[in-house]
Length: 336
Image (cartoon, rainbow, N blue to C red; front, side, top):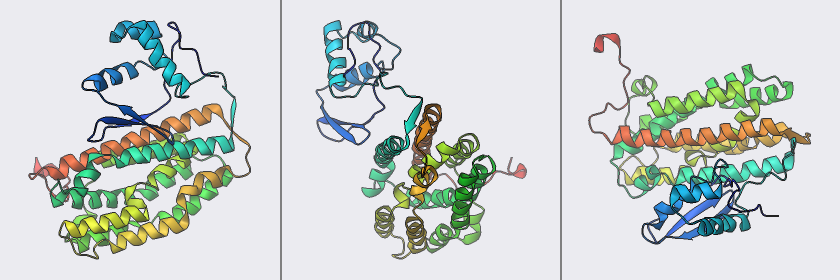
């Protein structure tokens, strides 16, 4: 049954993302559902302003007063969301989430966030060759740092895991992942960077932020970390289609045709290892997930999604600047 949309209700929109293509509509993504919203002039800004108050902390009357949308119109908008099943409901609050339902929801959410990550201007800019070739080089360089961090965040997860079966699973994961960075390094060497410079390169702050966030999740929330593998093991550079796209872009940017072959071999190994299936393996034989653990895992997964946004932002910003050192240098005392 759809929740009420009366003036004194406090509606909360289910988590969604928006993508605004270069045409007269807006794509609203909720899990695996896609809704195309018609855009009419400045109304998009008004709609997004209205949407931000659908947070469960404002009544419909208050939203009407804040946004200037009449109460009848506000009730109508909220009612439309309710009819589409887009409002969060309290009627099915449970102490435990069935494992099958939890896994299905995580799959839908990671698909939504992976899709949104793919909409980042980094990818469209590279595809359209809007950026200089150093941005493409920077993407591969930061991918090297990202892969090189595997032993750090996996070992952190192992050290703070209290479940023996999950600790064994994570230990197997570490054994498969701890020494893969050389593949990205060798690709960078083929792209023209000296090996010593690659190995001594300093990650961007966006990359450090991503790594540190994942380590913190690994420290405090093993279930959340396992859920996060579905996001960071399935990102654009870690799928076969994504890797092949990068190979094509490398040639278009003037790099040697086979330069990314070592990196592609890393992707192929990860696909064979099925690291996006770690969460299913961890929950096999279990009937449910305590709801508070589910809440924490989903929130950490969402935070990691935003770390990817910052990671991509920093690549565009740093490597687009002609004055910046590539690879990035550490600043020592005598440089001051």
